[in-house]
Length: 357
Ligand SMILES: C=C(CC[C@@H](C)[C@H]1CC[C@H]2C3=CC[C@H]4[C@H](C)[C@@H](O)CC[C@]4(C)[C@H]3CC[C@]12C)C(C)C
Ligand SMILES: C[S@@+](CC[C@H](N)C(=O)[O-])C[C@H]1O[C@@H](n2cnc3c(N)ncnc32)[C@H](O)[C@@H]1O
Image (cartoon, rainbow, N blue to C red):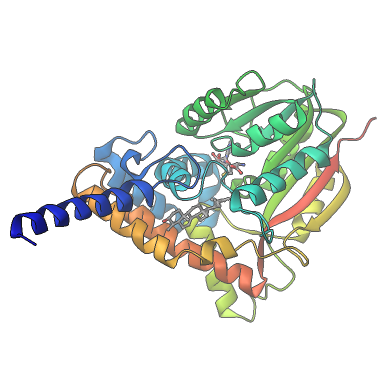
């Protein structure tokens, strides 16, 4: 083959490989975010480093002084991670039990639809999603049940993303999103027919405050279901240093003011006035391991790391993305260990009813 032909073939193959690496392999498994569109939420590019440092300074403060600043710290966290989550995970920011023979997308949807069944959502109902992210669960629940879902998130950037996804999915007549704090919600008393939260109330410094607010806005007789992040009965923090390190790693990488123990969930629900209808760790057998999706990805993580590094060097992605991506990679390790040891679950399900007085 002539040199010119060789060079020509090499450059075509090289360009094809680069295209595949960045755009095909690097695309989210769900349509939406691509690596080239990564942003840091509503943080301007010059402020990313400061915000990232501000995020870490939270963990250096004594526990008592942290409480008031939690919503702002959680908001900063979601500015930093929302796009990376969407790009590398999808529009639903939660785990689900692995279902043999089904895709991650199906397993995610089934886990969300279970909530609609638990709370008996149906057409005409107004349902609250406390901590809605970019709305993956809200769309699945509205589509399955025909109910109207109102989501609340502390992060303004997520509101924009969620509304855009709702429109694109043709579900904006059923799904609404507001920016606000679920510890002080801008909703009338007794104005919802049902409520749920998926892996969100773990961000509340005091669970009583968010459960109390949800209790207030529900109509008497209405149901509330939640998937909670908790330590299980296997957690032995007083005698096992590895347990402590895993749990602290999860807290640091997921903006948590402090993980709760599984028994605190029903205690809190009863304290604010709910009747507990059911409670179950959905991660327990026969459920497939929720953490397997995190483990499968060594090559994917490496590819993503190369991608964010190159995109940052080219100034396509903002400075700071690499650091945030590294933090998430480490967190994935802690979450996986939490799952393997059985000391942590992200799906401690509780179903409660507001009594009819
Ligand atoms: C409920 C919460 C979030 C749970 C999960 C949706 C996220 C927890 C850890 C995240 C990730 C870890 C590793 C990332 C990887 C390095 C990157 O290349 C692609 C994205 C990740 C897989 C990312 C995706 C979302 C998580 C699984 C908390 C915050 C209460
Ligand atoms: C891990 S995400 C889960 C999102 C969604 N439930 C899902 O499964 O896709 C947690 C969500 O809780 C929201 N959140 C955390 N603290 C909040 C607060 N004080 N008020 C309102 N939303 C909050 C975050 O903004 C984020 O949207």
